[in-house]
Image 1 (cartoon, helix red, strand yellow):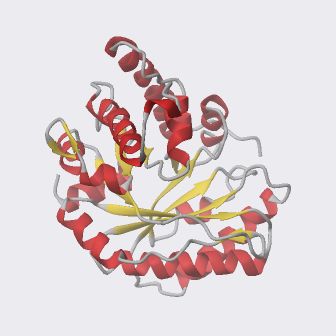
Image 2 (cartoon, helix red, strand yellow):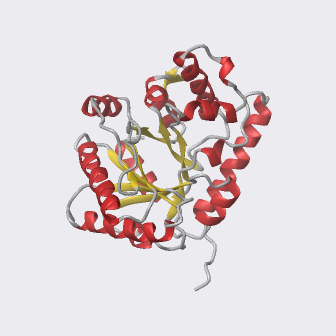
Image 3 (cartoon, helix red, strand yellow):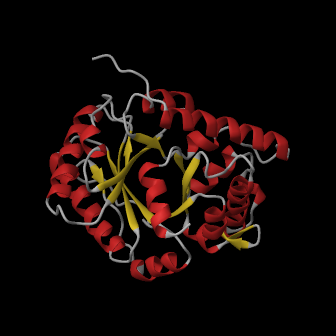
Length: 301
């Protein structure tokens, strides 16, 4: 796929984006969910080798194709690794799946009800390498815990600064200001975030197109104006701790939003499965998430 083909697929393709970008502290938890306990590795290299094997098995599965999975978000080490003897981004592209790269380096401590992104030293070099490897876009995550307008405004400002830096390298930024779905102020935070994002998008009407990765809103339809905004290539949803069944029910209520699930996609996969069992389980998860992304349920007025 050329860049124009990838853009068209992400903008209008039917399907969802797989999040295969667990990193740092989330890797042991992901491996445990996959049936591999900490005793299985002796050092960080061993741990990352095991998670790469898991991701390679997913990407190599016949159930994982561009027919329903239109994109996949990679961890940096996964991008630099290989699947089936080919660089991971190329292996994805050959299956019709558009590659993205997680670029954030984790979160700062909470202030004003939010957790900003930590500094990203060497980001320009990383973006240049990603572009050379065929990566289409990036993803960067920060977290909103409270409906604090100052904190949310700071999150959005930081996301757009990084997004502009990404776009300058010819990549499409996927901004991820995640709202904690367990927050007692979730619905109010949704509204503040929506308005801050709209203001930032409108502030540069001729600016580059961005993608948005957002928590499923507490009230269905809250993000419709973002879905329709001319500077937004696509709005995708994270599962945020919902089970796959619950995430799919909630996602299906929201017009124009497609999934970008991680735990909700991988939750039933186990290292000990035969290839047939693994492919069947992955296929069932893909079908369920695809349906929620493409077939929307009626929401009472």
